[in-house]
Image (tube, rainbow, N blue to C red):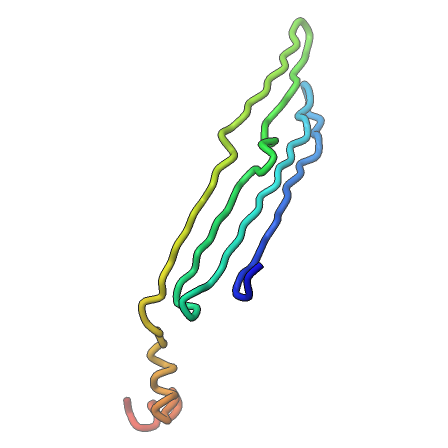
Length: 113
């Protein structure tokens, strides 16, 4: 990986849950992201892939007297995100500018500003 880069891997797991009339099955997924700064750290490129193994889905069983239902829902969860940002200027807050001029908030108040 490059000098000004970061790599992030994250996972999510929800254990099976027992409900009054059934149960929800476990859910799990993994995401991965990479980010790098370039052009003297004025620009950033990022790339993120959600649900790397395409395993994110909802499954449940519901049952009672006279019925039994099994449901499964698979969302469009695998997505690729691409980002590019550029920092146009070296923004400084007004307070930092004042401090650079040798004045801080206390001095400004004493002078009536």
